Length: 423
View 1 (cartoon, rainbow, N blue to C red):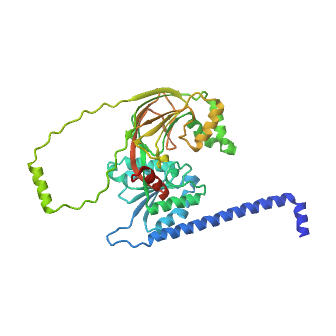
View 2 (tube, helix red, strand yellow; view 1 turned 90 degrees about the vertical axis):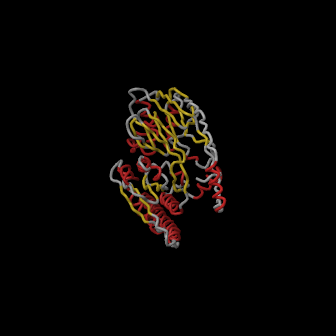
View 3 (cartoon, rainbow, N blue to C red; view 1 turned 60 degrees about the vertical axis):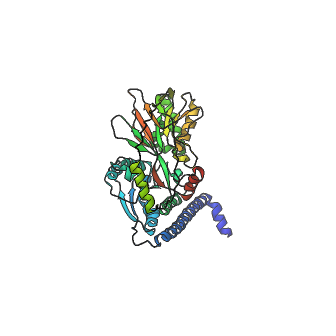
């Protein structure tokens, strides 16, 4: 024992390095062991659903998975096959995996997709946006938009995930929870934004649109990867040097929010007797036709706001799906243009984690339809669900409760408890 202590003391640098290596290896091994336990527990839970007996007339559920292998720096395929695929198969779901090979492919494939019981998106914000846009561009979108959508967060950016599942820093646990939510079948209805430019077909989003200086600075973040934790500050400091002040001229026309229509109570009415049905038909036959009165349609009242700003964001309220609402609306946030350089760096770093946060002093509007007018000759890009699109004047329309997404049962209970209406 004394000889070992003398050796450690004599070679203390090597001993410290070996101790750090052993601690790192132990932590890695413990993490792998913990993930395997989580996978085993999730598979056992999924198998309970797979062991359930189906009626003779019932069909096995079919799921079409759109997997982006390039997501998460090329790790998405391995993450899906290790964490999500076994759960879906054990639950008795007939799974068809479609792997995308290039940007925009999922959009085209959705326009040709045949009928399925559920759509599963395995990727990040970009893959999800392509699937939603392809789905809602179909001629029969009224039928296909009723298909529930599952989202397995495998991308670098997964903005919709907090609205559907409890946040978790452990990637394996997060993927397992999302897949089990799909198996359990709880759904929640979410709003969608239809974004229409002058020429192109509409693009659809579930989180929102950003245009401004904070977005432009955040787009340069990957260039400064070598700065490590300082890259967040660096991209905004360099943006200050290159383009200051960060002012944009925004002109917005908008219509106010609309009331949520009441949900009629579900009543299980028994069929009336034969004599009652005959009398009812005779009454309708001999009844005098009523004059139909046409009520005058009130003209739409557009309001306009034009002011300088550092950034404009238009977002859905999907992150706050559990809050009680009496109106359907989207949020329009016009950031103040009078910010100091320190405030720009601080707020920009915050927007990297929450892109649609509104700083103090912002002008916040709620609307059901808006028109964003950009000055002539405007260059640059929008961020629509964290994907770049050419910045042009656009019309943004809210489609309330347009799509159903699989969600954690706690999220569904929160919505039911607050609103009292089914999702």
